[in-house]
Length: 194
Image 1: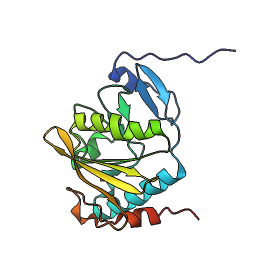
Image 2: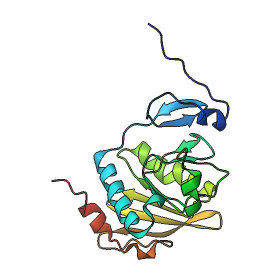
Image 3: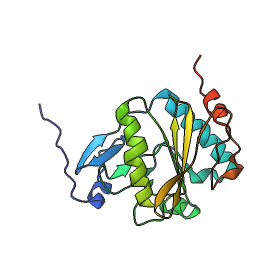
């Protein structure tokens, strides 16, 4: 029986040219591929609800779900946000591969929905926050289903500052998408389990 060959990538460009013939998503960590596990059902429901809300406000082509890949500095060297609002010019740039490179303008908004567990909380609140800040992404939302909160961060200079940590009947205040007019309670009511 043959074991699969592990690929060791020296550069991000080398990784981008790799195709294993599947639709699997991988994070590139220390030059090796780590398959990303599927999202929880609640996270998918929240992301889908928000995708629809943003698609009603914007050109639907500017709203990208979990399959959008962001090149970042540090390890892993790429991320797959739960939801991303891209720029108009990204539509054409992403036609062949749904990857935003560091050499491109950053997306306007990235949304992460926290998965259960301390490791996942640290990843979204600390590691990804630092990487997205470094990329110059002007707005970052961290949605926490466990605590039913939405933390909205805005890039001020080179550092994220807190716009607000919203919960209950609070309107989610977005510096760039003020026309959203969405309460936190609406977001979580849309995915309430029976």
